[in-house]
Image (cartoon, rainbow, N blue to C red; front, side, top):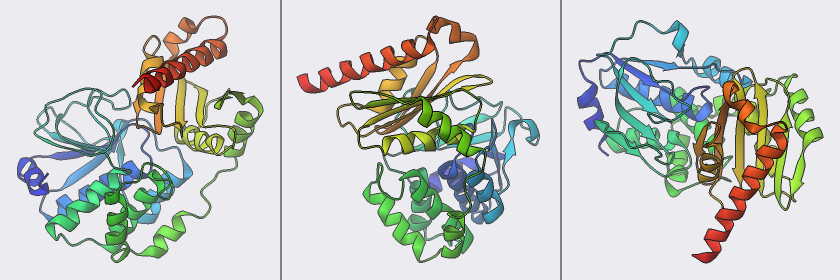
Length: 328
């Protein structure tokens, strides 16, 4: 895609850049990087999201890189005539609130689960959405500040788990490009003091409740915790030598939230959770990482023992996908 096609579409409109709900470092850095890119080309844009920024590392990004993001509840007035660019997210996905503006563009690295006719679409199978945004600077010779380059580099490192997850050639090329422009001290700073004391309670609950069935590890967190923390704990559980699929779920105020991580080549994490969640909620994601949600009003559909229902459904889904992979 030519990034200047996007600037042509957005020019002379009020523009909002929207991430998925509960934005993580890749979403935040991608939105910020695009905002700075558009600003250089004379297009101001406001960053927005729904949910909350509830992880210390994400909050720290806003302070470290001087990023301003508006939650839905504090968003400057938006109308149906305003343009929205979805970043690290796609319209109709369950983790993106449908705001009143017109979603004219989408820049993302997740699989497409729902087709939508954007005026501009750049969806690539890469490790981090921040890599796509970084490529816009390189393709167009747009100057990038040391602050912005550092934010994008941190986003790439975080979403690829330091190049151990879903990494593509573009991710490595863009980190190399950003390295020569970034204030690397800011990246280093982001790796210090990123865990809150209360996080230990969630880790402890997951460790106490873990159950393993033939390489699939289930862990339950019986209380409300930061959404992004559930994903981090799923990475932690996956690091166990006896686990190649990790399924973590937490009871939150609005329902049960899931995070899935997978090292099993025959199982697509996004397709797995999308299939399993259908009777109760929704979900989706990448080959190796995915998330989902069962709304509180649907929890009763799980029956008397929610854990047995969840475990049985996932294990049946995994067995089905493995069987299909063998038959191919």
